[in-house]
Length: 531
Image (cartoon, rainbow, N blue to C red):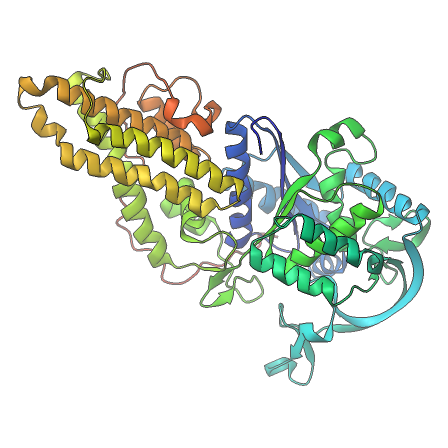
């Protein structure tokens, strides 16, 4: 992608049946890092997130809490889902709710066009339905229940019994699109990522596609089908359209043309909806399919997927209250290979915080600024004659910038951070071998000391720019301390090594990442609802 192009990125819209846990936060941070990076590249960036508020699961949850679905959704959005974005410093440009009038209007337009084009017909459906997934299940998706559910078929994901439903519905002619989807996957190998996700999707479509039931008539919490108000739109069909309705589909052609297509970041459990159903829906209307669909792995606790129903859903505040927001963001982007499952543990989080943030990056920043303050009264000196050691730092900064930017283009956030950390490690090694504290003891070494200090400050500036998408608070603090010009988030990230500043440093009021002596929790702190 060339700098200056449109970059539209989305998270899934999350169900408001309960409060968010760190699995949701993980997806939000990943999309946020990509959005911030592209903004710093100068791309025309738009970042969308939001909530999914229709469907039988929301209706039942609201009823169980003695309220209406709309009141339940309003409460959860205002008290839990929107505060989550602030709690982990998310820079979204838009927040869409499926109960927004703009979305409901857009869905009706989308659906009417499908009907008019002949891609929807009336039929009857009988099958096993998981309310937790809001999805009809294939026999291969079911397992025998145990314990209280012994003798029943349960969903392999939610471990709750499925319901046998039979009703008259409207159907989308999904089966018409199998060949076109396979051609899409062949022509654009990076359309579905990572490769394991692509292989799964291709294998699924090659087995053949059934037509999709897209309406329900047994309850009324949803968007009415335009030509038959006795039916509401199937919650997933409704939800997928948010990516288009949020950027003007059907009502603002100019904005839609500017933003679309999108890069979708989703959990692997909802990959098929985004990589099969959604592009088929768009193809039916002659619209361009998404730019990419990236199915990331699950966060595991004790070897199992994080789950609210199993009380393994850890509240983000349980981490940020001890380690801070930046450390939360860094840990999940660095410790987990984006696209694969990752196991969360307090011990690993604590170890990485101390070794990589407090000792590695934070201590480096404090030492360099303190030495410039002590030995040159805060004035960043001019670089004198350079040695291979100095030139190596500049080369690492340049290479790290290029490698990190290339990794982001592949959506490999963990590889991008690993590339940046080469510069952290190189600077720490440089300070150790050059020993500026020893050079300062002899005035004859004044020029050499100037060069070492100037080189180290230059490296810090490159780090501040490169780390701004992941560590926005720490990067901004460091940027101000080394006299960087303007806001660090406005610096060209693909030219991070070319930054400029005022030529002065200001001592840090506190370490970027203070040492944490308190014991970390031994067991997960579950996310709990205030409702």
